[in-house]
Image (cartoon, rainbow, N blue to C red; front, side):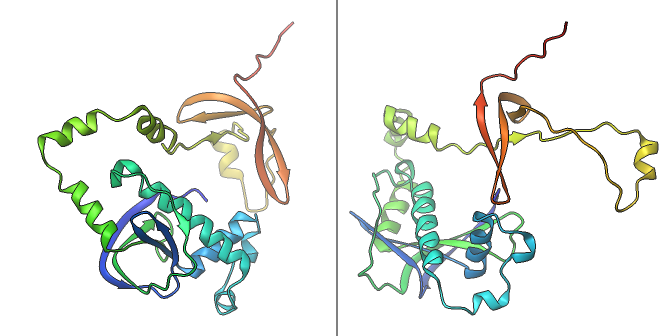
Amino acid sequence: MNAVLRSMTFDTDCHFKHAQIFENAYGNIGFDINRAFLLNILHTYYGLSKDSKPGDTDSQQPVTKTEERLKNKLGHELAQLVMVQEILDQPMELKNDYSAVINQWAWSIQFWLEGYDEYCFSLLLDTHHVDILLASLRDDSPLSGQKTGSLTPAQIEHMFVSMPLTLNGKLASINLTVAQLLEMTPGDIIPVSLNTPLPVSIGNEQLFSATVAEDRGKLFLTDFNDKTPEMKHE
């Protein structure tokens, strides 16, 4: 999935019955996601075709171990991504808490993604985590500016390596005239030549080239090179 955050909504004193619960030194953090959304991600993760996407009947079936593992993986990674040390001002190591039974949470943050208007995932905080978060947001003292400007090398490195980037690969291209385009009808076949190697870029800046490989119906990039080999002309 290539998803972009559209909006965030907040709730207090929320009830979540089937949240994934994690513990750390300060209390508990929960994670929940629409089951239809989770099944959609699961199908995408295994590279299944569009025709085999989950329907309403899938949501009525018992929860599988695969779903539980994926929900746990998503919850752990997204919670670590959102509640980083730069936000909580304290290091946070999450572990699964299978013994805790928590249905009521002090605060929930719903993350809505672009193109998935019916789905969202939620991060759930207990009272202690809310206090820590609000304390960091309300810190308007002059020392807070010095604190922000004096990040440790480890914090700076963490912020840098966590920066999201989108890689674009130009798989194929073709030149057509307007007349040829107007003559096209449904069912026409346009012959194209795949770029070999495939140029990979961030924005308009090409970083390296790669080879396209296929496995179980999904395309992967492999054999990365720093630069696209120059064509030799005799």
